[in-house]
Length: 175
Image (tube, rainbow, N blue to C red; front, side):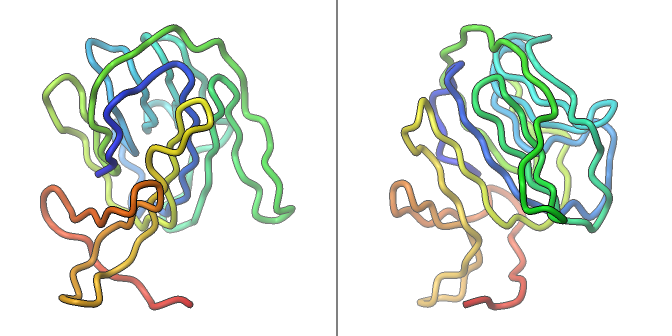
């Protein structure tokens, strides 16, 4: 779960993950009220929306199950990372429509109005959300040493986040 509370058309998002299954309609992250907001999901490929419905772009390739991928969106410019060349490639641009909504943004499921839906399962490597360059969420997977609870640490506000429902499972330790 991200700490995001206000979504605007100045949103900048970067997410790196591996999906265990490619499920049509699955949501990687979403914070929308009445079809306006930020949405990244599996809908006829991968679709990124910022603003009202229709203000978005499809990524050029759909992620493959169990293969790591990274997406970066800076307002209306969307990029997909190429691990072979270690570069971002533009996958499209669009003009975000004006929005300013208060909505929590979960990761690996959607938050549409008051409903959490369409979860996906996967491995999260990083999740960054900024509003016009100001860090809101900069999440990395970790576990709390005191009690070994697995969660996400928000570098933007020094906050440890646990799963809203279910639980996170730890991967291999890294240094």
